[in-house]
Amino acid sequence: MIDRGLFVTTQAIRRQLRAMPWELYLVRLIHLATGRAFPGERLWTAPQIAQPAMVRFLRIRNREGCEVYLQPFAGERNAGYILVDLDHAEPSVLEAMRRHGHEPCVVLQSSPGHWQAWIRVSAAALEPAVATAIGGDLARRYGGDLASTDWRHLGRLAGFTNQKRERRLPNGYAPWVQLQHAEPGWASQRDALLAQARKAVRPLRVAGPGATASPVPTAAQLYHAWLLRLRIPQRFPQPDWSIADHWVAQELLRRGVPPPTVAGILQGGSPGFPRRHADPLDYLRRTLARAGQELSGTRFPPPGGPCVEAHGWPPEGIAGIGETSS
Image 1 (cartoon, one colour):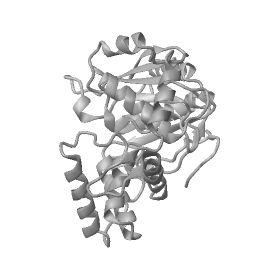
Image 2 (cartoon, one colour):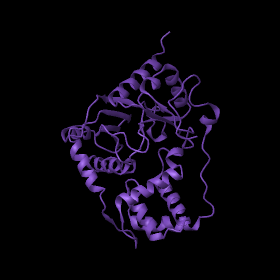
Image 3 (cartoon, rainbow, N blue to C red):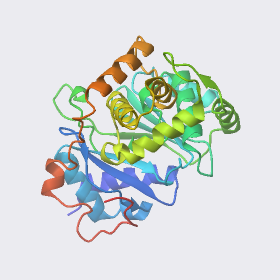
Image 4 (cartoon, rainbow, N blue to C red):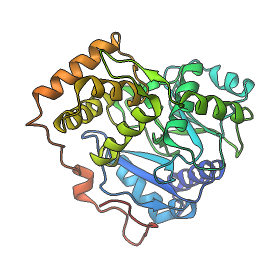
């Protein structure tokens, strides 16, 4: 007997991956209740992700409360695909993107009235600062979420449900992540986007509250280096950036970095800063003050979660390309 749900999900996955071709992908399961990801990073080819055993495994975990995310993987660089999270945009925004030469290759409806668009801007992998700058530019142009513009932000995988409680349908069910558009292609204005981003990340002066001015690329690189050292992206693929700012500030202060310099690094490196902060300078002051007060007590939450403890990853009999962390 044909499993119709399995068939529909598999077809959606194949269509999405055909429209955003890449050698390897990172698939992440994040348990909604705990915010914790399955430990480790395993890389998959498109055919491996679409294997029946893999799809069944992902469907089961999704029913247990895990969100299913995907990202083309290029190590410590961006694969040339920019994610624009259109959580609060108008429906006409997708046509505006096409009209202005920023055509998405993939558009997902993550829930009614909420979209995610993948835009391909480069065949070669991009530096993190350049990809983040493009993501921020596109988010500002089209009303996207400025907190979701960092270069390695994960997007949803089609064919699974959005487990967020605030996205529940009137009947109480979780909405399906639906593939609205899937066609391989490039943004016709990609050269302009790349040129503008590269110009933006050249050494420019950044002023903080009494901060030592620092070049934007340096601040972004320092911030990103500490994210990796603290294993924040590995543990929390969709981090709360205010918490990440706190942890980064705490570690820099612990090592004797002057508070004004720490403020400059947060301001120049934290993704999407100032995000929705009404008073960015006051936010920086409060973050540094809190980090200084709690230096002796901060610890990371343990990795794992209910769905991690109960079931292994990957599913039995399915082998990924490799692991980049344990």
